[in-house]
Length: 381
Ligand SMILES: *Cc1c(COP(=O)(O)O)cnc(C)c1O
Image 1 (cartoon, rainbow, N blue to C red):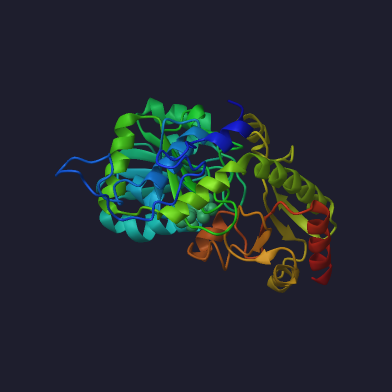
Image 2 (cartoon, rainbow, N blue to C red; image 1 turned 135 degrees about the vertical axis):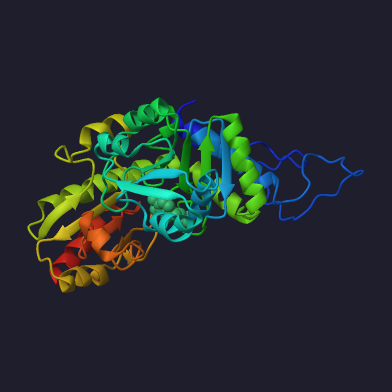
């Protein structure tokens, strides 16, 4: 099935009791049993819910995987993957990734004795240098948030196979419409479904997709035992969002390309971070593992004062100043004080995330209007 069809039909079956074409929101906590232990496959809604089941089926299909699991947030999905580990186990993660992932690893899991190494994954050798007999998991994110670095998923997957490790890829920025890490050898794909999957800035949710039955069973056991499950209304919203994922990502990518090139040519702009430029260090890999480059762009002004960056951040009218990304509406964000404030400043600066970096989540509005908005905000600075 071609992607455009797949996104619309994934996990969709008419409701068996009424024929409703959309999976209903099964707003229930429990299910009546005919006799003790005799049930229709549903016992208690932390363990099973039909709306969640339809979504989880869709999640598997859109990521080219066998299984999907939905969680109450992206970080809850990440949390469940780390719960596969035990004290003493080691994880290799990127030195440039979503701030909340770093916070979960460093502030919650370090104290349980799990050891994290943060490396520049642009060079796969850096990962291999950290592997020892305690290493269990490689945690990769590509493109990275917010510096848009690219990790070679195939190369990291062959490394993780060689040493018998698990590879989990946070695929939030690309979305399943642009990149499918399972087909490149990853064991688990993680999504903040809050972003492109939901697509309308109206839900918090997370997802894991995988191919291995035993791994699925282990993660399902964690999902039901720890209980970070999404409610049925939220599952319905993400199911609905997925239907337009293909067409939305086409437009996000078109608008993203138009704005990246506009910024690149702008005399007031010092640097634009976008993997679609042929001189981006990850360009060739991005071109081979992604269908398009998406709508996420970061940039810095030539005027490197905080004041100038703040003027742009508060000067846009269509781009709303807010955390998050991946919705139909365009957002502007200041990683240093917003999405990435949980990373210590020295750590941030060392990894190239400056105090003046501005991040855009380009929406699906008309590109001309978006460029006009950026133009007036940059002029004002
Ligand atoms: C937002 C985000 C997360 C966390 O997801 P939540 O749904 O906010 O819990 C993880 N990774 C990336 C890349 C994100 O952008």
